[in-house]
Image (cartoon, rainbow, N blue to C red; front, side):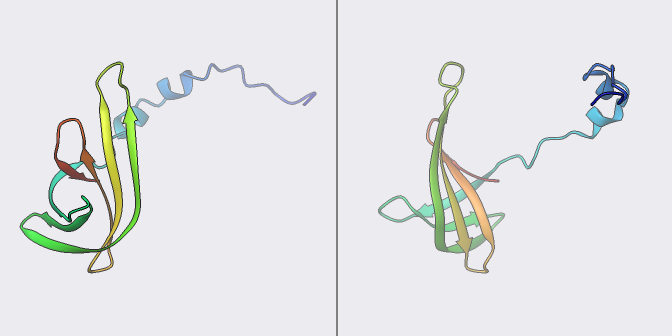
Length: 103
């Protein structure tokens, strides 16, 4: 736009000008291990977490991610579930190292 002031400030300087921005960044929920009971087809039917059991009433979605094979293989099968109390849960099965994890 002619006549409009131009911002000559380099992109990276805005973060450097506010060091507290980096301090506020933190990872999203770290996956936690969950005990899962599956049916004959490998679908989750019950979860056990912190000593409590929850029955799965619906599997809303199922997908798989295979990534970074050139560094450290990641192969996960994800499930979007609905528990008996109506709560939605996303968990995955680690296909490389084994185990189930909730997010």
